[in-house]
Length: 422
Image: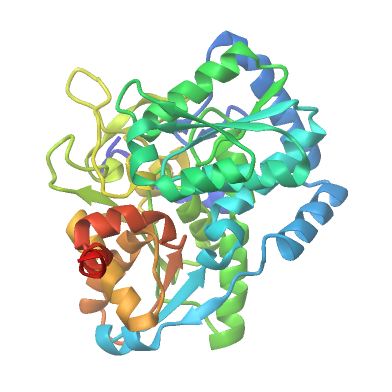
C-alpha cells in the first residue's frame, strides 16, 4: 500500500483511533495491516496469549512486579542525556534516550522481562526465542534466569559469527543457543526456526518474540512493553526543557525500539517522528533492509505488513552490516504509521552508520550499537537542514557486541595487537 491510497479523512481517522487506543482492533489489525496468519496448531496458543495479555497486562499485581523488576533489576528509568559536542557540530540541540544503560545493554530487556513474567503466569515450562544481533537473546536468557524458566535461543549462523560476544553471554546466562544454518542464516531464518519449534510444542512452550512483528497479539504486546521508553522520554524531556523535542529518531528493523519510543508521542502533533532503516550497500533489492522505503505489502511470520519481495512475491534476502536490522519485514504498526503519514521513514547506508558511530564515540564517549548508529546518521542529515532545532535520538543499545565487526572494518585493535606481538 502506498500512502496516497488512503484518503485524508481515512488517515485522520486511523490516527485518531491509534491515539485513542483503539488499534489494533479485535482482529489484531492496525488499519489494513496486522492480523493473525499462523498454522492452525498455533491458534489455541495465540488465543491463550491474547487472553493472558488482556488479563495480566493491566493487572495491578502484574504491573507492580514488572515495575519493581524494571527498577531494581533492569535499571529503569534510563537516563536522558544531553550530547553537547554533537550539538555544537550539528548546529542543533541533541538529546539521547539511553537504553544502552539498561541491564544487558539495550532496550530488549523491557520486552523480554515483561514476556517472561507473563509466560510464568501462563504456566510455560520453557521459553523459545529468536535473535539477530543477539541483544534479544541475551535479554531473554537473563530474564529467564531471573524468573526460573529454561530457554532456547535460535540464531542465524551468520549472526552467530558476527555477534560472538553475545553468543557467549547467552551461554553464560544459561541459555541453549542453536545456530540456524538454513535459509539466509540471519534473523529471518532464526524466526522461521523458532516458529517450527513452537508448532511442535504449543502447549508447554512460550515463544518470546523479540520485535513488534508476528501474529496478533505480539505487535500489541511488544509495543505495550516497550512503550516505557517513550513514556519516560516524554516526561523527562518536559521536566528538563519545559517542552518536547522538534524531532525524534530511532532505528527500524522489525521496529520494537522505535515503536516503544514513538507510540507515546504519536498524539503530539508538534513532534516529527523519523524512523531510520538499513540502507545497506545500495538501493537495489537484496542490497539493503529498507522495507518501508522500497517494500510492498505481504504476509511474513504471521502478519500482513510491508515486505521486501520481488515481482513474484518471493521474500528476498537482505543486507545490512547491523545484524539487528537485517530483516525483510517490519512491524504492522510501523506500516500503518507510514501509510497515514505520521512517521517519516528514511534510510542510512552501512558507511553512513559506521561514520556516525565513530563520531558518537569520539564526540560523546559513547559506543552505540551499529543498529543505533543508523538513527544517529539519520539525525545528522536532518539537523543539517533544520538548524537550531531540538532533537532526541533513541540510543537503543551499546556497541560492545559489535566489536568483532568493528575490528574487521576499522582494524584499530588488530593493528595494535599485531604490533604488540611483533
